[in-house]
Amino acid sequence: ARKVQDPRGNRTNLYIVGVAPSGRGKDHARKVNKNVLFHAGLGHLEGNEDFASDSGLLKAVELQPAILFQVDEIGRMLKTIGDARHSYLYNISTVLMKLYSSADTVFHGKAYADHQRNAEIDQPCVVLYGLTVPEYLFDSLTVENLSDGFLARLMIFEVTDNPRRQRVPQRPVPHSIIEAARWWGDFIRSGNLAQQHPEPVVVEYTDEAGMLFDALADRVEAEAEHGDLPAQTLWARVEEKACRLALVYACSRDREQLV
View (cartoon, rainbow, N blue to C red):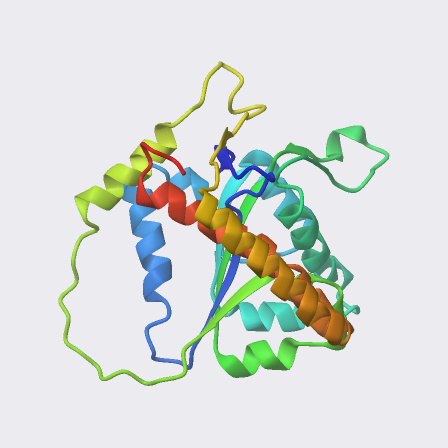
């Protein structure tokens, strides 16, 4: 977080939503994330598990610019913040959208008469991992969030099958994963101000990766050209999300040789 970027400035901040009916084990990944951070001594990177207001969200990011929010039943939250009658919640999606697109620059929040309340966050890296059952997520979708870019920023993974239950004993987090998390937690490029104003390492593309991104860009343009406004909005973020996923993969595949 705030330590690497690709040649076009894409960072590792992702908004992911896991969708599955109750009892399908979708909470397991959230617990794994918590355990990895805890055992690696990086628990401070995990933020609150719910948002009470947009100002509360911003304060959390201001205090910890690289932060993971894990929100259970995010579908209910999305339905609530989509209701303009709850203005203190309604602005949460707007703030999340702005933070998503501000990872490579300085984010400025609302302007208050009291200047001490004005948030200024250098290169915020906000990762959102939400869980929900299908009905809450799909009931929360509106024409507005299909068109305003919020949904386009999400990567939604839906469970469509019902795997056979297995009696698997609980296992500790593998030491190799904890060590990898610690390595990245300790990684600082250079300088005493690296945490205040990070200068991320640029992870270059391979020639093959560059060709794949070019082909994807052509596909995105073709799909967006023939789609309606919601479809155009969704396709507009496809290449960006692919770049971010590729960056995360490159860093996890070989942290000593980033490419």
